[in-house]
Image (cartoon, rainbow, N blue to C red):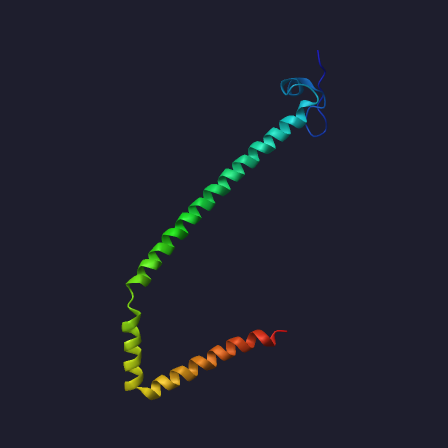
Length: 114
C-alpha cells in the first residue's frame, strides 16, 4: 500500500491515487503536456473563430461600401461643384484657401515634433 501525506499546501506529497491514476511518477509531465496541448488547441480554435467572424464582417462591410460607391455618379457631382464655383467664386475661393491652410497646419505639425 502506498503512503500519502499531506504537505503544508494541502497537496499529496506521495504518489497515492493521483500518481497511480496518471500512470506513475513520470506520467505527470506527459499529462501536463497533453493538458497544455488541449488548452492551446482550444485557444487556437477560439482565435480562428474570432478571426473568421471579423473577416466575414469586414468583407460584408467592404461589399456594402463598394455598392454605395458604385451608385454615386461622380460626373454629376463634378458638374454640381463646377456650377457652384461659377455662381459663387468668392465663397469657393475662401473655402479652398481655408482647406489649404488646415492641410498645411496638419502637415507642418508632424515636422515640429522632432
